[in-house]
Image (cartoon, rainbow, N blue to C red):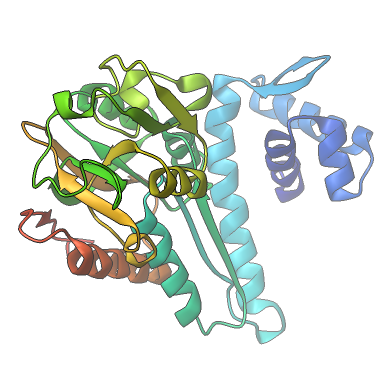
Length: 315
């Protein structure tokens, strides 16, 4: 087994085809095909299933990919550290549900970074993709929430991905609406109050299960639904229309203008946290990011909401 074979494996998995990986790596398709065939023979397993549409990782291949990423990442760090007396490249990759506070913390860490070499990746994506990113070591952590409804299903998915959930804070469900919304001045809302209005939510792709939804009560029928894939579109809809979405109630700086956050009565507790692969050790940049998350959440929690912060010092 060689590093080159592992690099080819990663490139093909990310590209979805040997042809695309060859173009990306400026090498011949035959070089990649022969390297992967040799690796499969050596390990006595099938890494990819091949079809006219491209290649797909097998279960064995998915597990191997996670280890391959670790090995290549460590090899790159060693090379950067000792080649020409250089220093290792700083890296932070975060996958998250669509929380503005997670992006604000990310941007702040980027702005404070003084390393000469770095790579920062922020992915706002679906719940299933977050879990897969952590499983395959594409991301250091994945930020999402649990409640009484989805906890059993998601905890099983975390265990299958060899990842553990670490809580950041607990919060009651809040309704996000425009400041001009007819309900904006109400001190508290019920699900019945929301019935006449359009519900906004984040689309979950092929894993569009109620358990994978980013918003509580997704299983309750609603006659008017708008699903989006990016936070900017949802924010614009909230500010300009009389719809609503459900979330934690934490309004980061970018969301303070034009938005109201109102507690929802008789709602479950949302436990927001992050998952991390059981074999990953937190880097200094990740620790900085978690500290910044804690600061932003504490400073932007809704008054009187009783958000409970988790203790991150154990990391």
